[in-house]
Image (cartoon, rainbow, N blue to C red):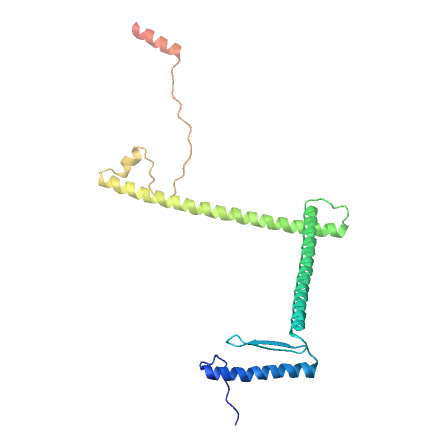
Length: 225
């Protein structure tokens, strides 16, 4: 019957923890030695116990293993930096090319640097300009329609306010004994039907008859006689 699965967690009992440490440490060092011999690998193992005691194994010498490890790590980091640098160099070159193409297209759209274009390329440029112009016109028409709808909405709101104001004035007139005929004859300009919008218009001022000085003087003389 096989052993049960051991839960990998810290052993609370200090005696059991020490026994387990000794067994697994010896097994680890043994496996490291076998790996170095069987596979001709350079192996270095360093273990510190919970009390700070050092246990190590090196197939050649621990110093050479550590030096080789540090050198390999530096080379790996340099390789990563070089690879990253090459990546960003490619990205920068691609962005510069895209910027150059965009600037060239912009100049051609403005009618500049067209001498080197063929008839087909000029036709393609003309088609793109026409499509752009249609898009601009559609956007302009939509903006104008939105503004017209907004003005209509505001006009309806003002009309409703006028209707409410008419109702309030009419109600106040009835309370005070003033009827609509009086309001109309007095020139207040309140429409008979409040639901009809009021159209305002400018009118020319009425001309007043001013008598000339000569005629006024003549009248004064006649009155004196």
